[in-house]
Length: 201
Image (cartoon, rainbow, N blue to C red):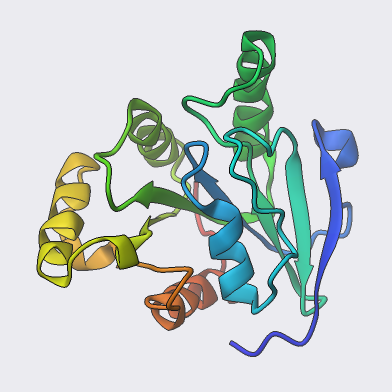
């Protein structure tokens, strides 16, 4: 997909701060430090649009990015071992769940895993939650540039098995460093941005 414009459109901790214009949205979810911001920047061809930090848990709000003035990418707070106060971590769950449950313009959620690590409890819970809510989910295994090529097939297969995905080829292998998997991911995202969109929930 050709990206002509990509801009930060605001942050929110609840519906009152969500964009009111009803453009379709694709959300990105994953544990803290999984590489969501790097993935977003690579997909959009921007170096610093989404803030990249070495400190887990930096994203503490729902961040919206307006793309081509046609749709939004939505960066959800990371879950897992974030080095932030417990009270803040507890506050993220209702924020994320409320967005996923009630956002009618949400077309799909990209669940991001780390190629070097097995899926976490948070990953499994996110996948199960999306299935139960009938929200389309795309699974992306990122940081594959840090894994030997011979091990990538088993990496994809193990992620698929852990998340209950029958066909391992549905799992996208991605690298924000090399760009591997970017075109494939865009093709899959484009299907959800068509007028038919999200479909029944």
